[in-house]
Structure formats: structure tokens, C-alpha cells
Image (tube, rainbow, N blue to C red; front, side):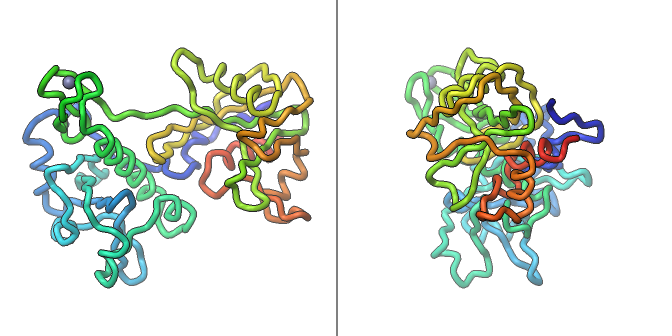
Length: 313
Ligand SMILES: [Zn+2]
């Protein structure tokens, strides 16, 4: 019914999933840990300028990890550095926020590139994309959580950037990850795909929605599918996950087994939703669909779910 795998994790084949860093969460609390990482010879700095990565280009090759001097020219703020982790050879990576904008970088030799464009552009390897997802999500969390959610006092970063503490009430705040259920619902030789109005022309993808408090992953899958398509889902099986730093989601990819066939589209969410036979989906994946329809974007977990179902025997 659902695809099964014996050779590795499907998550490893999703975009942003190749982060090789050892985060050393057992060491981050020490006050001298982050300062020591910053001054380590060879340390790499991932600079985020107004929400997007600032990269250098050397001999045509994009590089995400700047040295400390290059980061300083971008007015990157070391006081707000977050320790990301060490590569297997022991090189520390840190994330740094910078006020650099597209305009301010004009003519500097640096480029500021949207993380989605980096995922689909094919210029960065999986390891770099994984580190980027970590940096973007954690710096965005700091940006949006400067005040205590309990008492409103300005909070202070701690634990090398992995906690914020309230000096007034003592509350500790941790970077959040928001779980999203994304699912391919299948019924015999057909799968259920939908189109949001914002999608590129001809694009269809999996249904998805945030998991709510007090809900299991399986229940969230069944609820979202029922809300968006009217389809009842029985058995649900987890398949793969994907960090999705826009701003802080974890996509949890599942297969669901439909127990009904008649679709009622939620027109507030979707402009179309229908069953697609496996052979038609194959043509959407390989770009040969006669009407130009396509299935999910490169690097997206939706594509992983669709491809793995389509090719399962
Ligand atoms: Zn407080």
C-alpha cells in the first residue's frame, strides 16, 4: 500500500536535510564556549542580512561560510552570534545577523539570496543548505522573540544563542519548531493532489496543515484532508520529514489511505483538488504531461512523497 524502504532514510533526500554539524548542545551553556568558537582560526560565519543569506562568490562558486574579517565588513553583530555546530573536521560555524540589504550589497562582491532560490538553484550542496536552514530559523526566532512571552520584559540570549532568558521573571524561552503535517493520500492506483491559488501555473502538490495542540500527527492528517478535500482517511503512516525555515516549520510527511472517493474542495484553501492516476503523476514528475501539469517543486518533501509513491512497486 505505502512505499517501504530498506536503504537509508527518505528524509535524507529532502532539501535542507543534509546538515552535517555537531551542535554540541552539551557544551553550549558554558559562558566561554561561544566566544572561543568565534575566535577559533578558520571559523566560518553564515551571515543573514535582513532575513536572507549573504554569500560570497569565488571563481563562480557560491560560498555560504564567510571568514571573520568578511563578516565584519558586513557589520555582522558578533554579540548576537549563534553557535551552529562543528563540521566533522572541528571547524565551528556561527550564524550572524547583519543589516545588509540587497541595495547595500550592490558592488561589494557579496550576494544576498533568498533561501528558497538557493534550494532550487542547485548552486549549494546539501550540507550548505542544511546549515542555512538551521541558521535562518534560529536567527529569525531571536528577531521575533526579544520580549518575554510571560511578562513582556526584554529577554537576553544565553546558551550560545539557543535560549533566551527573562531577567525579570526568570522564564526561559527556547527556539520553536512548528510541526506541519503534509500528506499524500492514496486510493488504489490514484493519489490526491491539490492546487493553491499562489502555486505556479500547472503545479499540483500534497495537502498540508499545521498540527494543533493536543493532536497526534495521524489525527492532524485526517483532519486536514477532511477539511480541505472532504476525503475520509483511515490508516496513516509516517514517511519522511524536512526542516522548512519559513520561518520555523518541520514538515512531517505521511501517506494516508483514503476510505472515501467523493471530493468536496475547500475553496478558501484550494482552487482545485482531484485524484490523479499513477501514470499521469509520473508524467507530471518527468515533465511530459500533455497539459503541462507538474507535481511539487524540486527539494520539497511533497515531491519526495509523490515520487516514492509513484515509483513504488
Ligand atoms: Zn518575564
